[in-house]
Image (cartoon, rainbow, N blue to C red; front, side, top):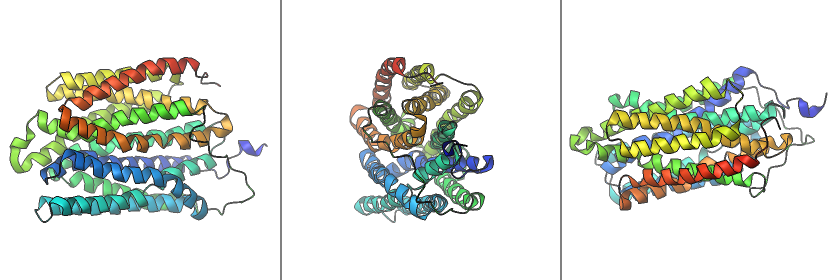
Length: 414
């Protein structure tokens, strides 16, 4: 049998699902900060742009370290790097949590608080990026060219689901305290890391004679438009996720609740993210995973649905209608993101699909380098509705671009 059709290091279905669960935990651990940190750092005396700058700096370092950790995983083993990454996610988020607790207790403020938060988040950016390249490499080794796109797409879906599911969990944990959701993701990451260490097989020494697919150049003309598209998409998402907690707190005047304002803002924001999570999971597992869908048709449809959701969130005032609007956003996201990733994979040969997926996995952190800072600046200087309006306009442009892009894309069977 041709070796290209035999997995280099096969994994069982349970082990592949554990890789997906690990990416869900990582996504949850990264995104929970947008629910908890935004309202609580404001309460501790930091401004919107300062908070966004802290998260942006760590995301920039995270994106820079992804390829470095990929090389480390090649040397020391994928499993070790994945477990280390999840444990470090838990520990760095714990340090961040203790800093927030000190600030809310009045033990730290001003420049000292800002510098401490920056210091803690820098360690986050340095130590946690290993799971993404290591899991992609492990899935690439566990699949053949025929099923590689599906396997890598499962990991991409896990990260997207986690980025919404983590903040959604805030709705369940916020009644136990404003910082309880952050504790929840810390425990989740550490437990998944420990289980992953037992679930995956022992690291197999790399056969240096075995050829591996070469990485694609970032400016490869086949993947470049898809990568640029995804970066632009996640810039819009970053703008909304950074400012949503402030938007809810200000629109519904939660600051008037006094000491309970932070806890209530976390609860309300968590409920909105929960609506997105329910929609995303329902569409991902109830439709995308069960039916052979054409990404060329779904991408512009999904983007158009996201635009409708953003417009609804801006124009419909009541909280239930805000939740309904973000439920619509979740539906659109579940259609758009897998479709965009699939089109990127289809733009290269089957042997290069793993490299294309790894390249496009850099789009979310790249988008979150710019999105939160832009969103915070818009919120502070142009008003609370500005991030929603600008994101809706940009998504409209992406929808028009998608119609043009998908007309040139190969059919799914290609």
